[in-house]
Amino acid sequence: MTSESTIKAYYERAGLLELIDAGLKEAGVDPLRPGPDDLSPFDEFHIGGKRATADFINRLGFHAGMTVLDIGSGLGGPARYVAHEMGANVIGIDLSPEYCAVATELSRRMGMGSRTQFRVGNAEALDFADASFNGAYTIHTGMNILDKTVLYKGVHDILKPGAIFGIYDVMAGPAGTPPAFPLPWAGGSETSHLVTPPDTEMLLTFCGFEILAKANQSAQALAAFDAAAKMGDRPGLARVMGPEFAQSLQNLAVSVKNGALAPWIFVARRV
Image (tube, rainbow, N blue to C red):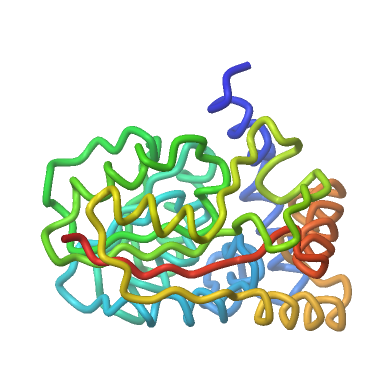
């Protein structure tokens, strides 16, 4: 099995839309008429959920009239946030056909089908014209990408000069020790490719970006883990994705607490 197919197989789950619908019904929500807050337990596939999405996206300066690329768009939660709150049009790409199909259907149900598009695509082979986007971002995607130079150079090429590229990824932490697997993005080290924040800054600069801001989000992550623990077992991704996903979330929390991992935000400008 190739790395790409291994990654797809790790994320995908048969009958995903039906599982989300069942979770929404359990939460007392009409699956055909969900609101953004109703979907956030299911479509925000990263540390901190919708609150982290808002904090990250609000740093990027997107606005109405822009066309923005979401790299690794998953189930479409962040893309819908950008479209709804910023007024931008968003194209999302993801390796998983299932995720793209579910994201498209969820956007349709929310009346946002014309503002968001989801396509099967590879972050290491961006198939768009040069200088065709006003902005781009990636949320918890880089951990699966071995050659981040290819990713960052590809993003540089498809962005217009001066456009913003935002990164919210989990990176190698200060402890210098390996994390325990499984993790939400990988069952083992063969598909988990972590770099340090200084390496990220170096690679972005090498690929033609100017670093505007960077921030360690470990404290915010720990607060989010504590809040989730207090909420208990509610319908959401952990329930939908199965028991191994719950274990992967526990491993992630432990790894951030012990310094093996650290989530970071980078805001860079295409020179």
